Image (cartoon, rainbow, N blue to C red; front, top):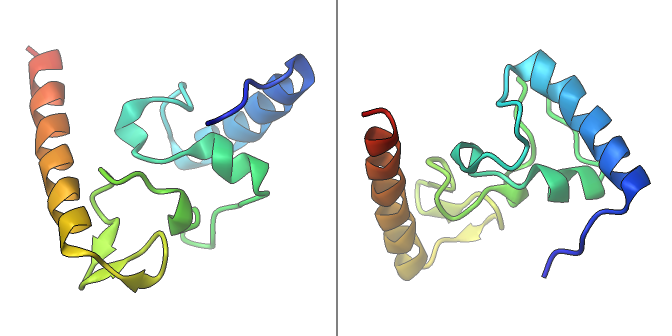
Length: 104
């Protein structure tokens, strides 16, 4: 369970996120479900994007489109479990439908 950020932590996280949001053209909302990424957890861990602008894969949600690549779970670096790959595909379809309806 994620703990609630204290006032000073909220400001620090906002400053951190705003820097990368601007550089990487991210949503204004760090909790936007379209990210499929836990930026708060990345911030807590001191993560930074690599030269190409990608943050560490370990903070990707199960619905992230590149969570599973060539049979590997990019969040863990281990062989992907078939049930996780299937769950990821179902979540991606669900989110696509949700985004489509949002755009109507």
